[in-house]
Image (tube, rainbow, N blue to C red):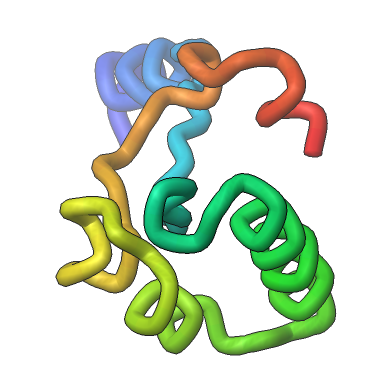
Length: 89
């Protein structure tokens, strides 16, 4: 290893790491389910998914977002671009 190689490695190691996340969504249609049922469904799904439920199955059944056809997957987002409440989850 040359001194130049070492300098490059040190420069690389000093670069800040930018954390990114791959988000998924379920969009529940309030008009389809009604406000009360949509709220109840969102709470039920949250509880079920936090206990290891099948997210993709829930997307297929309930989501009306364009992302539903890809399992609810959205694009990669820099963690620094997320709102505080989402980052702190």
